[in-house]
Image 1 (cartoon, rainbow, N blue to C red):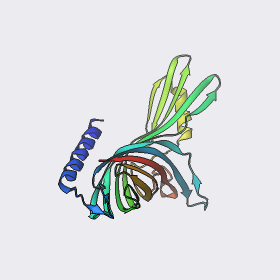
Image 2: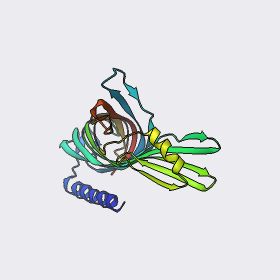
Image 3: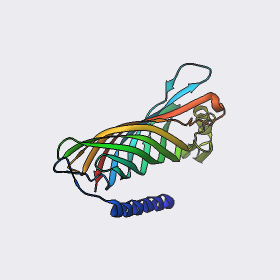
Image 4: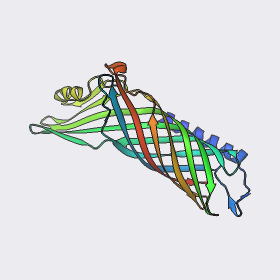
Amino acid sequence: MKKILIIIAAALMFAATADAQGRYHGPHHGHYVSSAEGLGLHFGYVHSFYRISDKFSEDVDSSEGKNGFHVGMTKDFTLIPYALYLQSGLDYVYQMATPDVTKIGSIKLLAKSQEHRLNIPLKLKYEYPITPVISAFAQVGPTFSFGLASNLKYRARTDNGNAYVSYNYYSGKMKTGGDSGFMEGIVESQSPEAKYRRFDTYIGGAVGAKFFEILEASIGYDWGVVNQYRGALGDEFKMRRQLLYVTLAVRF
């Protein structure tokens, strides 16, 4: 957590310094003045799932989706004033699958899958003024993603107290606690040799609108290009992430 805070603080300082050195103001289309070079803070909703395929079948399946939120900051660097920008920043993403309840005899198991990631977008952004206070924009480009944590947790209450098992999708290892011996086989059956890669790269874009040079709203879609599966089946099995996101931003 300390490392994450240091990274975010350093990125904020860099963005603020670049904003102070590179800000440019001027008229465009009458009274319209672009502030796209300002530092932006954003948050929004994220939905993702995996497209799953293997070389033995032509079928392509979709995994259970995960829902969550993303929050972060962006900075737009001018390529063509009032029109074309290069956008980058830092984005934290948290997602969780819908908790699943399994009953074994009198014992209820609560399963929860969750994921934490850091994303660095690198988007080409085109902005076009519609009125003096409203502009439309579109952006396209890659996003580089690093997985901080991805795990599947089972919790249960037994006669001997609480028990839990946590499976790490990156390392393929389990952590246990309490009276959890009977749960290990369940987790292994749910995630046999299921290991994921930490790194991913997305290609995608978004469209949106800016209001009063302060507020932005956008919707976007990204396609993962890196096979996230690295388990026992090797390259015979492929999992590629896809994401839908809705974002609100405040730009200074």
